[in-house]
Each structure stands twice: as C-alpha cells, then as structure tokens.
Length: 521
Image (tube, rainbow, N blue to C red; front, side):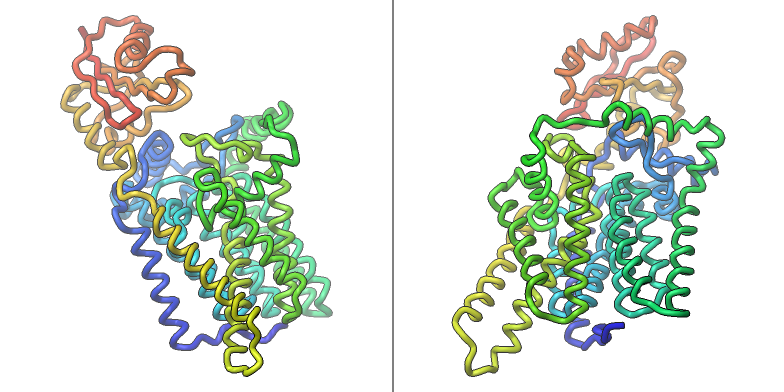
C-alpha cells in the first residue's frame, strides 16, 4: 500500500473547481447546434424513443461501421434517462454526454494526482478541460462519446485499487471497462492492461488479502458478464446472428491497408498519442509529431528517472497499456492508417485519451514540482531553470492551440434545429399523409430526418405504401452512386417504386443533403 496523496488543500480544490467550470463552459456552449444530426443520431434517437415511449428494450447497440454486427446495448440504457426526462429532445440527451465529458476532467485529475501528486493532476485536468478533441467528443450524440469518462473511470479505479490496497476498487474498474467495451467493440483492448495490473495486485498479496482480491476479481467478471445479458438474449433468439457476423468479418480478413506495417505503426502511434493534445494529426502534422514525441519522451523519462516506487509502477503500467493498444489498433483497425475527412475514426482509440493525458500530467508535474522544490535552493543550476521554462512554454502552447481550434458554434449541417426545421418543411408539403423515406445511397439511412418527423407525430411507412415519398440524397456519395443529386438520382429512385409521383418541393437541408418531396401525381 502506498502513502495517500488524496488530502486536498483548499487552493488545489479551487483550481480544480475552476477547471471543471471551464470544461463545462466549453462543452455546454451552443449545445443545440454544435453537434451534427444525421443518420447515426437519428437512428440512436429512434431506438431511445422506442425504449422510453414504447417499452421496447434494445438488445443490441448501434451497428458497427464494419461487418454485420453491433456495439453494446448498454449505451442506450445509459442515455435512456435523459431521453425520458427531455421528452425525446436530442439536445437533452447530448447534455448528458456533455456532463460526462465534463466529469471526465475530474477523473483524469484523480488518476494523475493519485500517481504523481497535485501538480500532475491539475496539468492533466487542464489539458482535458480545454482539449478541442475532448470538447468535440462531448457535444454530439454518438456511442464512442461516452468512452473517455468510462475509460478514465476504469483506469482510475484500477490504480486506486493497486495504490490503496482496497480490493473493492476493482469493481469500479470493471464497470468502467464494461461501458468502454459496450460503447465501442475495440474498447475490449483496455481489458488486458487492467487485467495485468490486477495480476500484479494478486501476486503481491498474501493470505486473506490475496483471497479478497481474487474474490473481487470474480465479482468483476460477473459485472462484465451481466452487461452482455441483452446480447445473450438476442443471440439465443436470433440464431447467434451477431457471432456469425463477427466470424464472417474476421474470416474475410477484416479490413486492409495499403501502407506497409512500419509506416502504419508510426502513423497510428502519432495519431493516438497526439489526438487529445492537438486534434487530428493530419490537420497539423508537425504539431502532431511533436506532441507524440512529447508523450514518448516524458514516459521514457519517468520510466528511467529515480522517483517513488508507485510512480515507477504507474509509468510501466501506462507505457504497457499504450504500447499494447497501439500495436493491436495498428493491425486490427486499419482505418486508423488513413484519414478521410468525412469519415473520422479517432473514436477507435478514444479509450486511451485518459492514459495519454495522465502521462503528460505526470511528466509536467514532475518537472514543475521539482522546479518549485529547487527554487529556494541557492545552487539551482541553469539547465534546471531552462527545463522549467520549456515545460511552461509547451504547456501554454498546448492550451493556446486547443483554445484556437475549438469546434465551431454550429455544425455544418445545423445540428438538431436544422433537422427539425427540415422535417417541418417536409410536413408542410405532405400534410397529414403518411410518409415514406428513401435514402441515396441506400447504405446510409434517412433516419436523420425520420426521427424529427416521428418526434412531431407524423406516421412513417415504407415508401411502397406511403401516401407521400421523401428522398434524402447525400452529395458526398455521388461518385459512388454514379448519379448526381438534385434531380437525376431522386427521380431514378422514385421510378423504381412503379408509381406516378410528382415533385412538390426540393431543398438543401444541409450543405451536402438535398431533400425532395413527392406526392401522388
């Protein structure tokens, strides 16, 4: 058991409260319009509405972007209270995500502080509070956006169990790991570092203490198993469709990359280590390379430098967690080796953000804390003063950069208010007729506009049977579809229905989405 670091002074508590307030301000500002509202968000809101209004319990989470299988249903259970309280208003659901993103600042502070003291905790909390990536992850509806809070909970719970010697903290780590895995299937990668620290905890105990850790470990397995009961029910009633979908994807070789393994590893490493510090790597590649180098350098320094035994264990643990995860994600998630602006995939590694920020906090805390301790010493040398100055400049630079690249106040598609307004315009053309929706391309659903129509009480039927037909055409996919939106693609789509229909309205609901409304002709 290590000496406690959790006695908090009034000044530190005030600074932490200020950082949490700053994080809340950045995340809750312009919340209704800041995040996009498209097919993914519409799908999730339709499932939540079916859950809280119709009592249909979801057994599966959102579909994955690869393969014919899904993430976990726990994502919907966690958001259901907000959906119920808000009467189905997506902004209230996003507010819960923003609240969790804000609370993640406190968890990252707790993790870094428990390892290396107050300065480490405050630096890590500051970096997450102003992180442009962290703010973006907190301001729209998407299953990976719950991950930073719960992965931080898992890491902090595991470290607290090891640090304090209280085995019950492992149950908290299990809860965090469960939600992380359910919100994105790649979150299972986090289980290995957690299990490794648990094994170390078991091996260092004796007698009743060892039995307690083993017993709590069994309890943690039960927690993880309980979270997958909905999936088990689905599999037993649907011929193990999810398992078959996953096996088919893996058996087909998964996804592939054109880059050689070394280049992939270097790029994915840079992408993962720089994301919470400077954002998307390709937006500022020199900064991203520098940020990744900073994380690696600080981690290597804390691994080699003399210090408290607990901090050295934490450095080895975090280094192992990052190295393991980077290797797995490099070869299991080939999408990370390329960047497509319209298809971000940085959520694949969002569960590592707390670990990256903790490493920077620990390193900066050691530099600044050591400098403060030496500031009263008459023999303080120039290299030490220069190192302190560099650390402060880098920290200020990271803060300034993230404040400069904060997400805009309005999403390009206008967010939920724009989708709701588009639904109102559709309803103005269709009147009290039932509505059928078509989407171009077919692989992208029209649920981004189905939900606001359902929210307003309109009846949705299949396009073959509905009294009116609405076509949503995404211009980003024109090259794939082979037909242009704004007329040709929509007319071709409705012609397959074999009905006489006439166009009554066509408008751009967002910069890349054109909506066409057809009535019987």
